[in-house]
Image 1: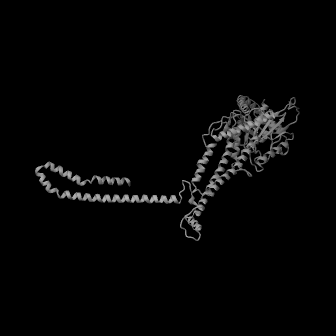
Image 2: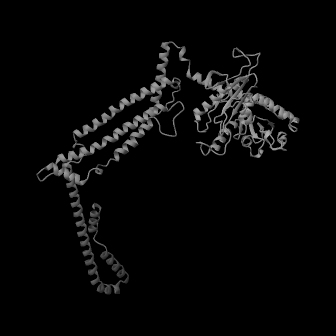
Image 3: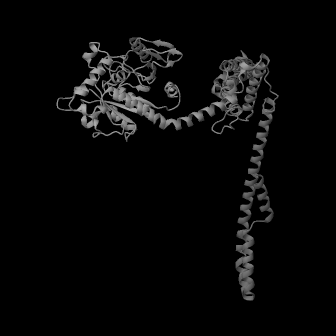
Length: 587
């Protein structure tokens, strides 16, 4: 059951439990992994060596077990995910294949990539573990590495250790201050409480004389819940002398057993202790994560079942007749959806509300883009007054023109009609592009089940639409040519010579009427002014004797008569006033 989870690491979308190894460059991460495996198989060299994540899956095969149908022996081998069914019994070949696969993606210039290399190792000397070796954190770029190489490595490391089901193996060199450990700093970034972090101290034998890592191993400095384990890897001298990994482990055991400080804390020292501890922690971690993983698998399984049910039965189980019927049904359904999309019925998810699509988009092209393009055509942008005069002169030849020549008019009008052809041709291209876009927007889940059929259907649709483009553009050109062949001067909106003369006569008549009305108003105004002046002088001359005579007899009536006479003198005759008002209304 656990092997199922291990084989799924790196291949599934599940956040499965795994041990992620982080640390700075040259902190001894690769040497720790080789000690856990017991074989020398990882690339070595100066600078950054691990440039791609290595997902290492260890399978313990016992001599009394039958593994994959074959009797197991003491043989050990490895298998790569990118080379299925190929076993590598020589671990030097495994090293060469890791280097080759790394260079294939990242090149030979020390570049990095987050694409993992999956390696399975089967051995009777290992415990069931899954580890991920990440590139070590480096400060200074080398070769053609980008200037932000440190940022890229940190982001890659955080991507792996952010998995809540991952156990973090923070590797730090014991001969350096633990506060400056890049591996521990990365681990505490996503695991501040140290709940799923294990500290590993390397290079314990290289510490200054009189110093040791006992305080760290006792979890008194930067405490972690999982604690710390000290290991001693092979030195460069041991590697140059071809000391095997297992001989190096034997040397490590002797070192810790004879050291005055570490021999009393052997439960926290040695590669064997680290391997057993990792195995126990991983198994316990799997048990804790198992309920959540089962729930996640159940949800994924339900989704897959629903997808399979929506796709229908397998076409391989159908007879040729049924297969043809199935094919016709798929294509008919696609055609129906396309028609619905054009008619504005939307898709099975409803009508789009964020943007115009389908037939509404085509209507927009006609009413907004094409119509505005036609309206924006200004005939006088390309036709000057000088061009009109030149055309008229050329049409008359050596004769002086008496009337406007019709041939020059036809020539100029045809030149303007041709400008209407290009907007129509462009509109055809826009509609074609929109219909191609509609084909891609249609939700065709059944058609997507068969990629070859889908590509073929799209290819046929594109070809059908493309075949219709040229005839449509030719039809537009024919319409323009028909308009050029005969200039219809009998159209109601066209103003010819006769209509122009009638319009000019009407304008002149209106102007004459306005002038006559203005003259009548002027005459009436002058006559009114003269009458007012005469009526004002006559009553004033006869006013004094009449007032003297009346003042003796009837003083009251005298005053009333005088006021009435004054009002009549000041007001114009009523008939003349009505005539003036009538004239003003006409004006």
